[in-house]
Image 1: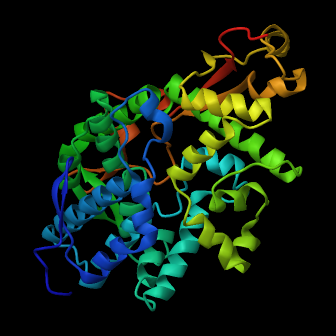
Image 2: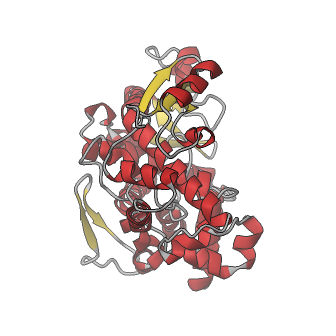
Image 3: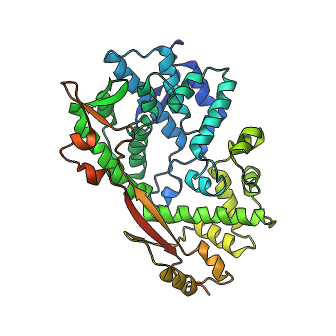
Amino acid sequence: MQQYNQRKIVNDPVHGFISIPDNILFKLIEHPYLQRLRRIKQLGLTSLVYPGAVHTRFQHTLGAFYLMGSAISVLRNKGHLISSDESTAANAAILMHDIGHGPFSHALEQTLIENLNHEDISLLLMNRLNKHFKGQLSQAIEIFKGQTGKLFLHQLVSSQLDMDRLDYLKRDSFFSGVSEGIIGSDRIIKMLEIKNNQLVIEAKGIYSIEKFLVARRLMYWQVYLHKTALVAEKMLINALRRAKYLSLNNTKVTAPPFLSTFLKNRFCTTDFLNNQRILDDFTMLDDNDIMSALKLWRDHNDPVLSRLSSSLLNRDLLRIEISDTPFDKERLLALKKEKQIKNIGLDEMDYFVFTDHISNSAYNVGQENINILYKDGTIKDISFASDMLDHTAFAKTVNKYVLCYPKSIDR
């Protein structure tokens, strides 16, 4: 392990001072792929609801990195062998876990990049970074992919109780001001143990896990799936979808150059693998490109693109209804006629009147379960170990349906 450099510290509003103990980790943080995350908000358009929620994916990445260091320290103190190389690799893996995110990530994945998700792009970028670092990140990539002899290291990076979730819940709660998301991440990490090569939680930490799962469920409904943030994201998806449709059909759509690459083309995984320029352009995309594009499109000749862009910039959002049952097609058609907008055809009203569905599941039984370790060595899944959580109800996926349409008639 390289000499600890006391000057390499970051002051984080959530965790306090974060030390960077290894030169390769510092160089990784300094790389443009990681620095790009400073220009991408963690919660996208949620700041339209909670004005303080303007923190970045870079801040979250550093927070998850801090928690990874704490977890490794706790496990070492409990007698588990984690070498310096393994520690560095696990820390590198958590640092890279979000590098494939684009601006307003979920909107981007549904429109501009249709056949790849951010995990796929993260792996492409990790492999490229590994070449840059001359193979020093190979073990980190193996940990990220779960191809490691020590499965618990992968679970610290990606599982139902990983450092990613422990940070984003606490951080998103802090910046949004939604206190229901506050969790005892320090307590949870102190309760970590390893049994049969997998992460488990000591029995005395069960109540902290219950709080974590309840907090996650509440944060989804109050923040991540808040109806105003949800309708704003749907409108952004439609704006990008319209811009791409126009671009592919030979209508000029002015946009920042790196965004134009993805408006004018449909790329598949093979394209990303075979054409280095495509990935290069992706790594230059950030929130500024999308917001700049919306300002340009506000005055576009196409009334659909113009109205969607202007509405997003001015926070003049569609009305949204949420129901436990699907909305009927007859009402949808009636709304398209009733709310028809001037200069916009009935067939184009799909951009302004539409339905969708959302789902929320705080815990998935059978997918890398959160296991509780008792003093006698027995292990029990949290959904069965808890005397507070009904495992059948809590692990159930809740589906809701949304209907969006203009607030007023514009003729």
